[in-house]
Amino acid sequence: MDQLGLKHLPTATSLSQQFLPQNLRRAQPLQKHQNLSWAINHIDNSTGVHILKAREWHPSLADITGYCDACPQGMGFWFPSSREGFYSPTPADSHSSIIFYFEALCVFSALHHLAQSAPYGSKIVLYTDNMNTVAIFNSLACLPQFNHLLKGAVDILLVNDLQLRVLHVPGENNIIADALQPHRPIWSKQKLIHERALALGEAIDMSMSKSYGSALNSYLSFVHSHNIPVEPTADTLSLYATYMSHFINPRSVNCYLSGICQQLEPHFPNIRDARSATVVKRTLIGCKRLRGSATKRKLPLTLVDLQRVIDTLDSSFLHNDKLFLAMLLTGFFGLLRLGELALPDDESIRDWRKVAKRGSVSLTMEHYEFLLPAHKADRFFEGNKVVIQARQYQHNPLIHFKSYILSRDHLHGDAPPLWLRENGLIPTRSFFINRLRRFFGRSIAGQSMRAGGATSLAEHGVPPSWIQAMGRWSSDAFHIYIRKNPAIIQGLLYGRSANSTMS
Image 1 (cartoon, rainbow, N blue to C red):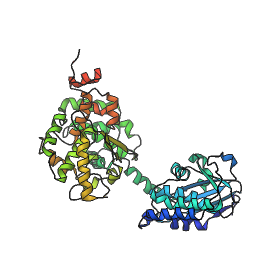
Image 2: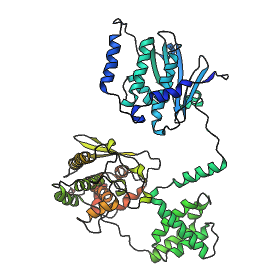
Image 3: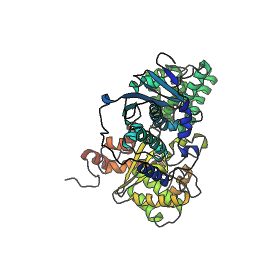
Image 4: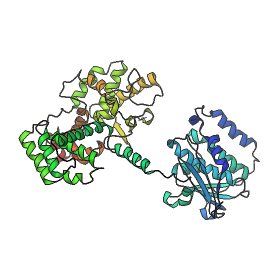
């Protein structure tokens, strides 16, 4: 025990194991009749005489106040009045995804400890920085995996006639309980460098890593073959741009320079200054004029194109046809990239964190929605909710999505991925493109869904800022889909459908 009265709570680890959710220990969840039996047992043992007590009372009236906090490595709670603190490590094989469980377990552990010493009928306030935990103990309602903790807390409260309020405290104000968690280990310099290298490797999307690596290889090959120092000065980058523009499109050289900057910045911190130098910019402009060619973009899909596919596949009973149609309509009306619906053909750049889950789907009479876990512009994997309205001009994508979901659930049940082929595999880019080729030529490709959806919205007078937000564009890149069509510009200017007549 130190000056704060800090103690190790020997029962906390055992509590972690004892109350770890059964589904996380690969056991069957509690049956409903067990919960009913628990409630009936309390009723049978009740005295039958009770005086109503207010559940909402001011924290200043508390007899005991405590603070709780948890992290994947441990948890701790402390009581300012007695200057006592307790901590415990979490089970060594615990996954960080169940941190919410340990937050709730920490509050339960504090209550469990107080039950052994608190006077009968005491009022207790426990603070935590986790809002989920606050909701569980104040509403007395929770998800099944937390049910045993909530029942255990109610058992303690009833047996000891305790009154409990669990309140929220911002994490930055919960420093003592946070400090009671096990100390973080000190890393060696080699480990620090290794972990930083891993973090830098994740700084760009996996789908871009190969092309960026190819750009760096071309740069290193250029400087070595021409006997030029590796350091990327403005002069060197200008010479590189000139050389590469003779072999590839100058617009691609611009992308190569971005990849080189990303790859070499940890070693040459001033590379972006060199990249933005006037001599490099003017060299690229000159190369584009000398050797540039018109951009050949794929055509956007139209509402008429969608109807053509619907007329063909609407009556099909094949699961893969239902899958393709649902993906096509969802991609068009949700402004999704093909990479957000299907896996890349190249297995080395597949990112399973981007796979949409069946459990995130919500269906109503008016729309359907699901969580897009991550996308190209989502650097922090916060995800976005994709909402598709049932009424989409003359189309109703909800009908076809429901048809796919019914077929998917019949074939694959509780399998996590949202999009699944008949054979149980997640669809790949080639799966989608091969079916797209049955209806359209090579002028239509995967990006035609996203381009078509943005074009359709613009034609119907949707403001550009809305289109950018709906499509999760981090820049004004979406303007490439709408800049050349006078009818679309009319819709943007006058805020109405481009197909309507002007008075």
